[in-house]
Amino acid sequence: MTETTAPTPQASPILDRHEALGAKIVEFAGWLMPIQYAGIIDEHRAVRSAAGLFDLSHMGELVIEGPDAGAALAAALITDPPALAVGRAQYSMICTEDGGIIDDLIVYRLAETRYMVVANASNARVVSDALAARIAGFHAVLDDRSLATGLVAIQGPKAGAMLQPLASVDLAAIKYYGIAEGTVAGLPALIARTGYTGEDGYEVFVDVEQTGVLWDAMFAAGEADGLVPVGLGARDTLRLEAGMPLYGNELGLDTTPFEASLGRVVKLGKPGPFTGRAALEKVSRDGVSRRLVGLILRERGIARHGYPVLVGGVPAGIVTSGTQSPTLGQAIAMAYVPTAAADPGTMVAVEIRGAAVAAEVVPLPFYKRPA
Amino acid sequence: MVPGDLRYTSDHEWVRVEGDEVVVGITDFAAHQLGDIVFVELPAAGKALKAHATFGVVESVKAVSDLFAPIGGEVLVANDALTANPELVNSDPYGEGWMLRMRPADAGEISALLDAAAYEQVVAEG
Image 1: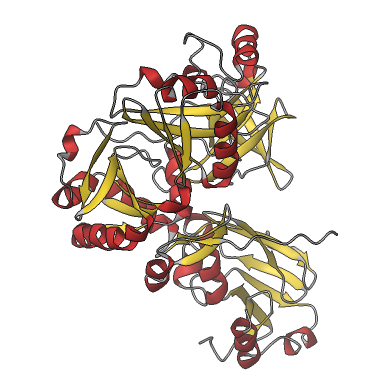
Image 2 (image 1 turned 45 degrees about the horizontal axis):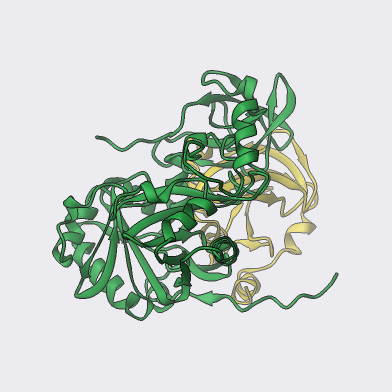
């Protein structure tokens, strides 16, 4: 075994708050973050019924600015950021030349010539480096604000009502996948109506030094109405119920957006070249041999990341994420299966500790919030 | 604090002696570490277990963990209530959350288990 020096994990800027709340702290993507407080199921249910407060300071924030910022991003990503109106956002990805996914992203258009790209913590550095290289020929500069930015999210049906008294802007006027500049608790902030839970909610970006003040103010604003702190554990079960992919599970360098059933994200119709275009056009033309689907287990058991999926009794796919759904009370999973077995209603099996457990292919998401 | 009248393993199982049978479960410390338990798989009655052998699994929302037999013996009955209510392991690990009733193969194995003070030491040392 070769000894490598593990880099010292970056502590959340408000680790003290989490410790005071009794959180269990884990290292995740090079960060010390709370995985749970009271318990994953209670936290999960609070987000579905009231609201949850999330420290997401580990996420990567990259600001791209300049007269060519939009064109640079259009060439670097698979979506078309210049098509966004100022104050709107889109789900996007950065791919390799061969169409593999480097990361999935949210792109916000903050101003005519300024965008913010939010990347997963585990990929923030890779994305920052790749974007910097890809925009090198454009009149645009990249500012990696990851360590300078604190991010606190409030998610759930009561999120807007809880946050509004602290906000300088009318939150209802921010559309889903919109973003506005304003103040929250008197702090200069970007307020985005985005999230990763399947609920309505807001993500508030502030100067990292102000993260604690922001957290305290948001927590105080909602605690009496059922707001609870939520860790990465429930964040994972919430996103899974909402059918949202997680990089490293559903997405990776060896998957294309089309296999991930996210072909609609790829804007092949946009003008100009972009990294991965040729490969993705070919996949779009030829079709895919496997696809990401939802599974509900029809017998006792819980499917987990890495378990084989059997089609006609033969190993043919793999589970990417799975858990016992707190909302549905059933074991749910996402999995790659052969295209021929990807239609809802198809019966497959998941191999759990050597036994074949029946599972049904179902449409995603598993959970959709009441309209 | 762990109950003083039970015996323990360093794998965080407990054993309660009841006549010539024993009841087996996992400790409050273990249940708390696992988090919300959502699935328990236990062996059928009649199964012969060797000490330290895997006898089942317990799954939390996040993770799957093996259960290890604290002593050898025959499974007399498993706690069926955990099929529908696995959360009993969290809420009452030494009571309603019990897992197996066994007939020990060798009573000597019981006296080799940790007492409460020794188990508390294991927990304290993490």
